Image (cartoon, rainbow, N blue to C red; front, side, top):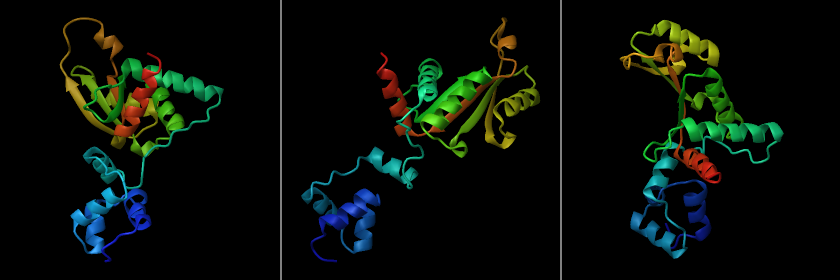
Length: 200
């Protein structure tokens, strides 16, 4: 390799192809320090560790695509989806999943529609989970959610069984358990939370 790496080549490898400084150095037969030197020389900002990890897990780019031009129904759907997440979603900064849990299949389906149509998340990227009280029939609950959401048992991942929380009306309200719907992507979670902040 020449002592000087052109801006065009380095920018293409690092910014367009998302190769790391280590990968570029290895392919070019030079040291990683040399690549870092030229990144600095050309004022190409290095990725943070968090950004590098994200690219490693998403080598083909973002697994979602924001739809910006919305018709009237889609505007309503977006508002509804953001409202659902504001009230029911996991907003913890330590969790990278866009996740909602609820006993109402209509709410879950609407939130899934929101992710599908507004952020174009593909079905295979969703994960599902189920939380049940120990006196609920597991088979009945699984059948209920399979039918309501049009999913297969293989898509319904972890089923958590918990003891009933004392006396009360929980059994009627949660007779089919709490369904968890999620999509793991840090960037999309930040996008949704930033959208919600606009309403505050």
